[in-house]
Image 1 (cartoon, rainbow, N blue to C red):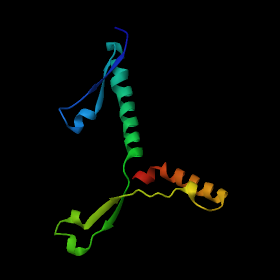
Image 2: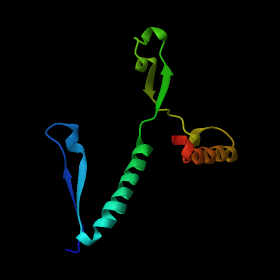
Image 3: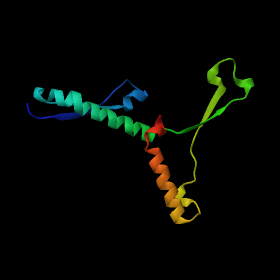
Image 4: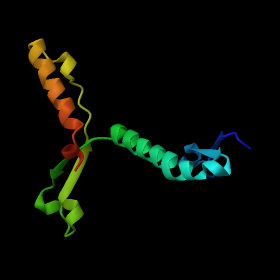
Length: 116
């Protein structure tokens, strides 16, 4: 049994969001167990987390007025989805300066401090 195979399937019951989640069944030779369990699955998990972070919904938070706190700290904050139609590509400004700003923002967003 020197072959590896992936089988795609679905999870969950009828009419739930769970049945839209996909999973893969991986089979491999026993001698490759250490490589798969220690390295490959960790790599897959890390890549999945990176994709999840890149695709997550951004939110803008603001404090609620004191009258709306209701004595519970969670009610002090409210959020809305951040969906702004403007892009740097459509911004009217000097193209060289625009490119400099975009490069700086990309460098910042890829830094470790951005997600801390």
